[in-house]
Structures are given as C-alpha cells and as structure tokens.
Image (cartoon, rainbow, N blue to C red; front, side, top):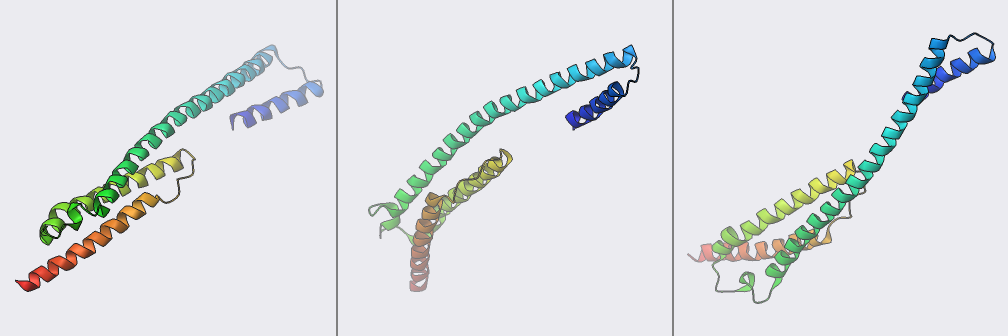
Length: 163
C-alpha cells in the first residue's frame, strides 16, 4: 500500500515535470525525502521478513523436537499396551483396577497428546506451513487402547455378574 501510494505521487511529479510545470524547491525536497523514506521502509520490511524466516525456522525445529518427544510417549504407550507379558495381559490383574487406575491414565495421556498435536498443527497454519499427515502412531495408540479397554471392560462386567 505504501509503495503504491508513493508510486502514485511520483507519477504526479513526473507528469508535472513532463508538462513543464515549475516545481517549487520545497516540493522537490519533500519528493526526495519521500523516496528516501520509501527505501528505508522497504529495507526495514525486508529485514523483518528475513528475521521472521530465521525465527520461524527455529520455532519449527523446536516444534519438531517436541513432536518427537510426544511420539516417543506414544511408542511407549503402544509398547506397554501390546506387551504380551505386560500388566494389560496379566490374568491375575483385577479388571476394575486396570480400568480405573491404569487405562484411565492412558486415556488421559492420549487426550493430552492429541490436544498438544492439534495445537501444534494450528501453529503450523499460522506459520503458513502444511500440518503433517495424520499421526499414525496416535491412531495405533488409540486402537491399542480401545482393544485393551474393551477387553478389560468385558472382564469387569463378567466379574460383576459373578458376584
């Protein structure tokens, strides 16, 4: 907008010059000052763009590092839920305990990770970056959780009926 406005004013000065109008010294100085200020303005805009690019690169690297940490958590959850010798496969565990104390915590962690990933995807939009494709680890963790939850819920219902 600033450049367009300056260009319009500069065009008026050129028409006046070509038409032989006598432009006063003060107007000529103001014209030169305006052109100088536009150069400074454009240089500052370019400097800001470069700074923004540098800062954005650092922020994106930080987001990637944080995303990797969340993915490590998801890998841990999947490993724990699917471990054939883990707590979620032990028949000696009480179903209600597993549901309330263990799986409830897993569910809360998955919700937290999902919310964090969604927030980061929104930030990427602000940075004019495409969000990554759906996180397959999150899908796999949700699936493993649902399988364990369904299994232990069924067992808890069965145990309740036996009482």
